[in-house]
Image (cartoon, rainbow, N blue to C red; front, side):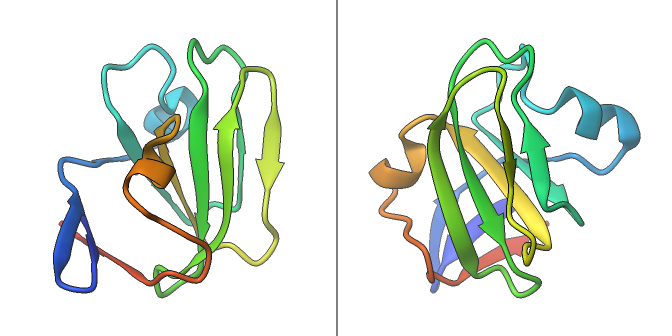
Length: 107
């Protein structure tokens, strides 16, 4: 999956957590830098070995909230969110992502 901002490719090769196992495992001990979790409004970082940025998205891909540098053993939730995008720590800032920005996700 790829993530676009306007017509610009922002992140390529995003893994999709579309099975129970992938959702349970998340980014724990995986060599990926981005994970998209559809139909989700909360995450945990138990057993994580590195901090992550957590982006909560609405149904259309608009960023509702960004939780930067979420460390291990934390819970994050955004009630109005429909999807979650997990990124390596500081990646949201490096990519210039901000709350209210519209993203487009494509297979």
